Length: 170
Image (cartoon, rainbow, N blue to C red; front, side):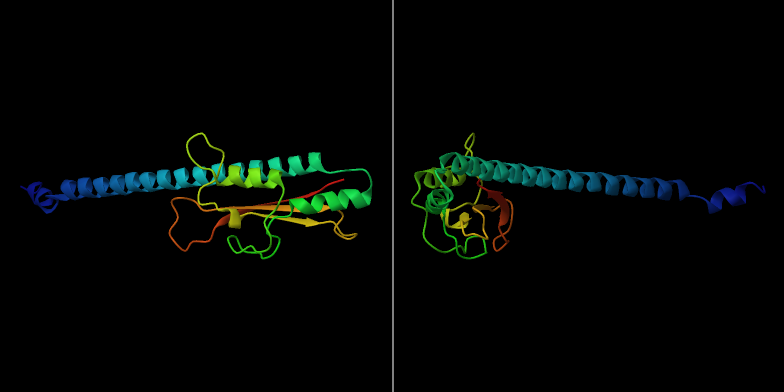
């Protein structure tokens, strides 16, 4: 008779243990699902950053190959046509004249052309790209290329992403 009293006081305890175990397991699964979504967003962001770096490097290479290296004055003068919207510091808020160079125009077209198998970045416009050339004595033929884009999954009003490449043409 003494054994029956302790058993009655623990009635239903196994059910509570099972419910707590199910709760902990469910929270773990929900955490893994949320972590998977975060990983996918990080992978997309990394891909866009890699594409932006590739596009900026591509233009820098084209500029370096197209410069007239007869002398320093000619080299500096031949860099000027590559400049594209040199004013401003905010993506989408760049100002100034668009480049007359066909190389820069083709590059901007490549950056803004998106779709499956196409090289462009999402949310890009020509006004969101910038090429600054500093060919003064202190600038030492410096070329700064800024590529701006917007991730498709970001909310409206979110700041654009940017990648800036700085190179010197010798």
